[in-house]
Image (cartoon, rainbow, N blue to C red; front, side, top):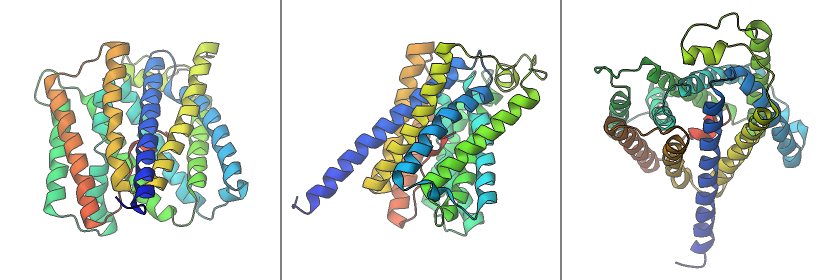
Length: 324
């Protein structure tokens, strides 16, 4: 290795450390949301989380260059993107109320495959047969987790797939938006959209008028809002800070190294999800679920490899869901 190569190698090593740290943060955030899912409604949690996350985001905006970075001529696109992420957020975390943490996260990780598939009709990109095979492999992995033909079939498992679709559409909007607006501005408008939408939900149905369905997933969206205890409020604050810090860590990783170096390490979120699930809830995926997770990871990593070979841009999955 030459002296010229050493700085690049060192940068890549630091990038791996950053993305690993970010994945740990996001797995903890998902754990916090699942932990409170039986007590508080989702959008109340998101409201408090967004308040703390937005405060930290504004601090970083000021540090990066001032509030002038928030100026935009594309506010409708920001708001549309934010509302898509609201749908993504609702579907993903509603699934967490009853699904295993690892299985929910694994299904969501088909998002890069969906982005690849949608890039054909929406952006006119060419996708070769190898990546179509990877997409099919990933979908088979989802079916192994969902088990549609068995007594263990759980329709709720389609919620993280819906979240993956919502995220994929959001990412396809992010590419052109990122050409004119900074990452800080995009993060700010996401947080602001979540804050506004959650406040609206609290004002309209926060009294629990639509609760009582008997479904834990629906109840997570519709139960009456409660004043949080000091301990729970601290959890919400931690979640908000984790979202902001995790997003910064991932952004730092992608700044320091090529996406093809960083993106594969996002799948480290899965073993951490298995770990938290086992330690906190005794969740151990069965053999079919492990096989499905393996197929999804394999398909995702192969897609990343093919993106590298064909010089197509890589899209980060957890770096965005973590901001939800």
